[in-house]
Amino acid sequence: MKLSQMVMPELFIPPEWDREFAQIAVDSRDVQPGDVFIARRGLKSHGEEHIAAAIEQGAVAVLAEGELGFRCEQSPHFPAVPVFFSSDIAACLTVWLHRRYASVADMKLVAVTGTNGKSSVTQYMAQLAGFCAVPCGVLGTLGNGVWPDLQTSRNTTADLSVILRNLQSMQERGVNTAALEVSSHGLTQQRVAGLNFCVAVLTNLTQDHLDYHGSMADYFAAKRQLFVGHDIQAALINIDDDYGRRLAADTAINTDVMTYGASDQASVRYSAVKMQARGMQAWLDTPWGSGLLVLPLIGEFNLANATAAIAALALQGFDFVQLLQAAQKLEPVAGRMELYVKDNAPLAVVDFAHTPDALLNVLQALKPWNKKITAVFGCGGDRDRSKRPLMAQVAAAHADIVWLTDDNPRSEDPQQIFADALNTENTSDFYCEHDRSRAIAQALDMTAADGIVVIAGKGHENYQEVQGVKLPYSDAAVLSQLGYRKAGQLLSGDEHAE
Image (cartoon, rainbow, N blue to C red):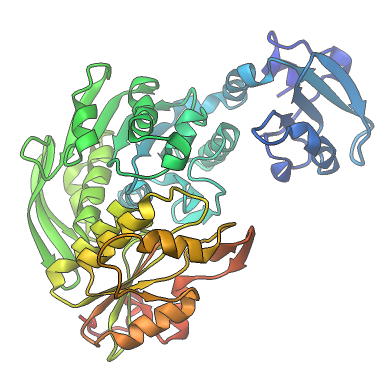
């Protein structure tokens, strides 16, 4: 496509400076030879500062936000690179992006939003679709790509340019279905603007990101935008959640609303839940039929997430019976209730839970096993401080032993984070250890062999951010060094430790 085909009539491109281009990049680090670089104003800086870097990496043209103007830059790759300035760049960019990636409008897209469960629902969808011989793309926290081949992502919900580029790449591989995690940040910052969704899912809404949104009312308003401000064909909402019930009753949603959960009022309802040594099962009643749902997963919230994934696909025409059969092969999402085992040692469960509600869900999910629970958790630095004592309250109420350790302190003093978390009742007997590896090792050592150690907060992350530096770190790697292995990696004939 030529630059003029994308930006005219909003911006005039003189024929002598028109350029054929490949992709659009809004981050200079993403520029490949032949791309157009978009230099926008940010909260702390202006993309203009990165124009030279983008040109060095092979940009054929630059569109920069600013007073109307033009200049020409030298390039190691081309005779000259045109730089067009316009105050309309931000206002027009969404239109331009959808012109460049127009074919993406034909894809079947599902948007999943909520405080917890976004990664699980999207990845369960991708797994189930794959088991039904329909390749499915995923864009979210744990990576972008066609399941299971995912590439690292920088954000839960990437910039619209990155989303569209990824979707078109999937389309070129013959993939026509994708599940997207849509965060509240992504909604307020218009990162999914102009995308059409065949299904929009709300998993839940609990306290998180109040450092950004300021209040739960504003946080809910951000999530609501997906259902009332976007083109969606169906809404799928968890009504076991207070905010979900409010959203499901919202008359501003001008499409079909389907609900799910354990509630008797849910359109898609699971009941008769039974915990088993290697997973769980439940009876599932839906508009497409009823049947026994058997899952090799632990935690009732995973049952809710799997139910949402099944319903989102059934709404697109997938066969319900085939989806039930496929569900028996689901794998846990990286860093979400991942079970690790070692002979004559307590079970270890790694989970990304970093909010009070998420931690509560994890600890409650393990109660049916009737084992002593040790919790190892931390609180992120430079984030909502009010949730720190709430997480400590949850740990104190639902674990037998609690270890407080560092999560990602970022630029904060870890000791201040500890002080915030401990500023509540029933924390006097907490063990406190800043070194996360040591805290995990000591927690495991002090827990009886028939107990469970929950390691919460970091999940899949392979780093620990301290004073602005991301240091290599992984809870899974710590467990591996201590002789643990994933439960799914048991040798043939081995029994689960539980």
